[in-house]
Image (cartoon, rainbow, N blue to C red):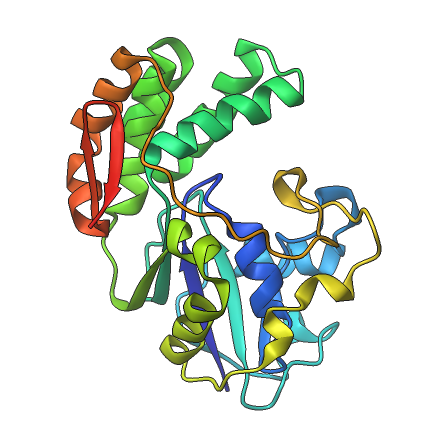
Length: 260
């Protein structure tokens, strides 16, 4: 039996980068959501959608859904858990990122992909259908910043059954080795430098979810407190997401975010 572990997160939180790193560990099998959509195996998509409705915390290594894989006999099936709320008891760890950076990143993503308002709202409403249906109308017709903040709050404070730990994106990119060791310890696995060199498994220019370059090494980035968002947006996000900010060790004040 293999353990099924969910990585709780929210869009634009560095999910693809974290999954790419962990996939390099011999005992971790990541269920898709790394390589950009049109290059994913149909079998992986089927496995991913099945696990979104999966009611157990283990799965047989010989399960038909894993027939196209060759997971380690004592391995972990790791599932990206970002755009729905799981209704069954589950084991998870959290990859958290401050919501101000997420809103800014979503804006940049929409701009670089030439998305109009309709496309942005359609995506938010699709997430709401799977996270909190009461937010669907807000996502379709209300303030986009408020809608994103409320979705973030609903997802990142959803009930959990067995949390292994939390790693913040800001800490991850500031010191990848330290934070990857922490994640592996949460999962009960030993260290391997392969996770730091995971980019070497991809051809130059390979594109991952969120349009990241999978062939590029982790770019270490020092955290900066300046958010660079309009005051109204900052205040809306800070007010709505305060329970999640407190939960994950962020402090928002006067247009800046601090790590506690």
